[in-house]
Length: 465
Image 1 (cartoon, rainbow, N blue to C red):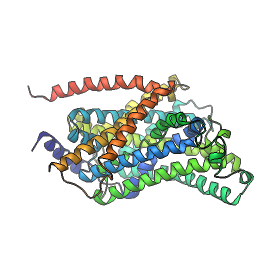
Image 2 (cartoon, helix red, strand yellow; image 1 turned 180 degrees about the vertical axis):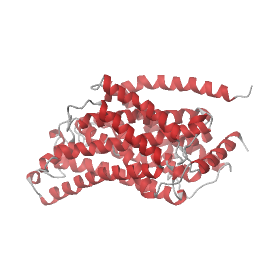
Image 3 (tube, rainbow, N blue to C red; image 1 turned 135 degrees about the vertical axis):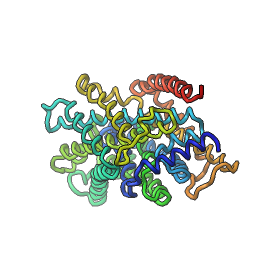
Image 4 (cartoon, helix red, strand yellow; image 1 turned 90 degrees about the vertical axis):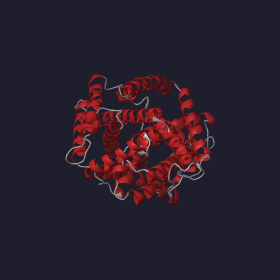
């Protein structure tokens, strides 16, 4: 048995003893949906529409194809080895120990930053009702409540995420169904002008040209970030052989339906050039339809969306630190679980770092959201690339007789793998096209240099004297 085989066998023994398989299929589906449907759709899509017009639909379709292949590759790996470390474990096994170290810590950092951003969003949108409350207060309260929920039981985390996600999904479905009724039957004030022809009447389907599509591909990728959370839940899923394949396929199809369906309906109801790029398209459309208190409704939905994403961040960071500890790439204390089978130390450490976000809300409330979101897309792209890379090497191991195949497989491999890798390279290059997104390319080298130093230190400690 090789060193990697011994480590993986030890990890699976630890998870069987330490973690509780308390997440049901409905939890898994909604966790991934909740992670990928965030404030980007409810708020950020207006700016993306302004940049690309209806061509944004093409950006989401192309990115959606890449995400579909990535998730199918992840699903195949999950069936091969359903562990909580997921893609960090697969990187360790099929790419190299350095890749497992880089991926685990990068994914932890990504969700740490996402958590800070979502706490900031909660603080900002509580101001809608209570403008006199300092922004850092609701951010701190939300962090305490969500951390407590994650420390009590994995089932409680699952229930929180289930209902948070249901609120978002009901809102999106309401938008799609009401919009369809207006377009088909000409109802209300919007009925006279609402039409699917609005997608190509005002300057064509891609009025800003190819550049608009290229600029918004990275926004589409950012929007899909979180769909890979299925992988992090693998160590705590009931009946993973049955649940994971169905959940993987179901989540991808639902995400594509929600995103593409919402964008098509919004730009059919209101021509793209009439939408304000600084305001939520949901609020703008609901206002024009005449739904009472549209701003308050969307404000509530955005707060639950932010809480949902932060909740997922606390969950995933705790599990990733647990896995890194099993491999000796994080302090041993982070690999301990409490009496409820929760990696409490890892959760508390992650929440402690998220307090930095609360502090930033106290010190620089106006700028904090921009500060903490600059590297999320790069971290997500790294994670997806590692999933595809690990899958390529897993298939090669099968061909050599060194790994067992499973029934749930990535279609079109290895060509679909190479499509995703080339696409992700294009996404990283597209970040250089605008000053705002270029910040990520400045920050990323420092992060990976820090990881390189950390890996060298970790590897030297692991070597026998």
